[in-house]
Image (cartoon, rainbow, N blue to C red; front, side, top):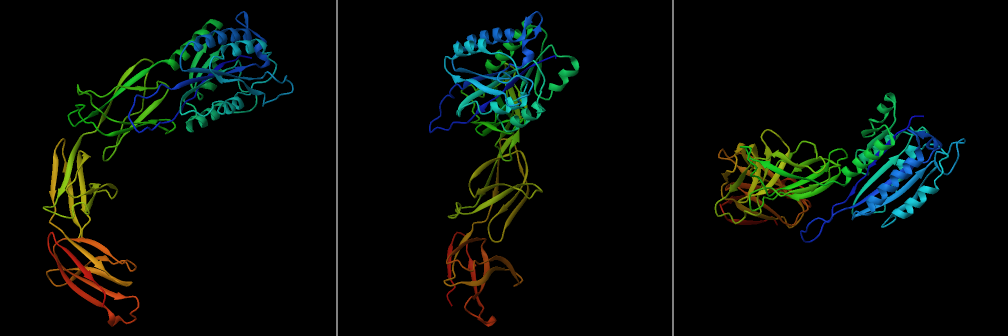
Length: 458
């Protein structure tokens, strides 16, 4: 039977939050080899017995990896406990757990393996997720070596997809050894494919993959203004795994003394997408770095500023306003009077939360410009109902008619409102009054910058 080698890359990346900013600690790379010891591994391949080739290549690779700092290796084997027939699809076991300096244990164990069983690829991949002890800062790599297709009716493609979606593994590599063309296509759904046509090319392919896993890559994020100049900065950026949606990093964008963005070390095994937390947020395209590459990621994030001012307003920190995209009902931000906030260049609708409401439509935010809107000086009304009741406040229009402003909380002992200067009326009936004629009315005038209290105990 023609067989193949399958390589999975697994990452467990967890953000570490500390009270002080510091250089990120280098993650521990843990590589788990899953070795096929089914009965077909006793057959010859290009003049050599397959299991002997696997022993030789793995032993050399383990020796090399032991010399690298921040790397641990483990070994899972399948098909080595039960002969076929009968078929034991649970014949998979972690033989050498992760540890420092365990290369010799792996080399010794490789010599004792006697291929005899079946090929439970899907079950082995599923089980390997538990082979990695909990770790806050680790890169988990799984290398599955097999000379045959799934023999237990499992679906390695489905398992791969599910584990990737959960963020347990990333897109795998597939190294096929002597696969015929019609079999190669079965593994395209699993990951990136490498074709090994001889023991020598198998060793070369495995070396290339491990080199890629251990390589370093970096990127810088350019936040472009309206003129495509990378001058925007000082905003949080969230880096996601584009496939699983898993959050990986949060960085506040920074320009150094030379006006250049900081260089960020990123993993070439991950396809990234960046969300820049401007208002509203903007996003990068999906991107993946090549090994040892430095990539510039450009994102359009042109911004201007918005401020609503109210002259000598003693209540400025109590009154806020809603910002929405022009013609859209979704709230983007709630901002205080006399405070400044940045927004993406464009048009916005503003609703000031006073009584009555103040609206500004199609307000244009321009690049690097502060847009200022003026709000009349407000008055502050404090209402003391004393006892529960049903009531509302109305604005008295120039015609003498009334316009509803707000309902009073029937259970509140105290409520505070901010009004535009003018004439108003409060209408109330206490809960314990059972007659319509018990309705109470009080007219009052709000003056700019003044505070007024009304006691509704009647």
